[in-house]
Image (cartoon, rainbow, N blue to C red):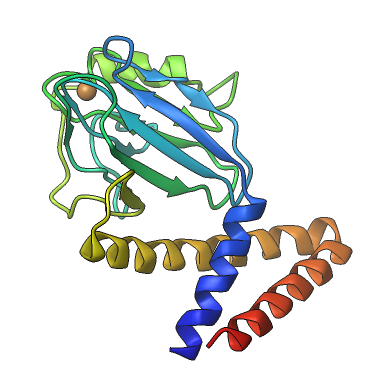
Length: 210
Ligand SMILES: [Cu+2]
């Protein structure tokens, strides 16, 4: 219980400092909007789903409509009109490009692909879309819905899903914090000290609230 409280407090800190970017899935035809998002390590990206039924699957640049090993997957999120209350959020662990697509029908080949931190030259999101258009298959991964991220149902209370999403986001945050600390250590030793100080302070708060 004590350990969980410390983790929960630390993860609140992570969320408070990180920016959240929104990506609209199928809001305007078979697209992700924006189709490329600039995000910092530790930032969150939340996908919002529109009709009729789409998914977000992580891919590699080399294989646009195929799931990447260990990549994230939202599951299919159906909605008959307007935005679904279900969102899917992933944490960005570093600034390497992240590629994704929709695995519904031939949406991937039709241009329903996107990226986080894609370059503006070389491996661009346009290049990714061009490669996707030529893909023979569009593959839905055989993994659990919400893999590699957090599915949330806004305005809904569900003990089961709340517990599930808490454990998932703690795992994600822990990895992200490790990554961002490693990143800061090279650039600025001062930041790492501050970061550790905050973590320690919040861990202590976690202790107080047990
Ligand atoms: Cu789609």
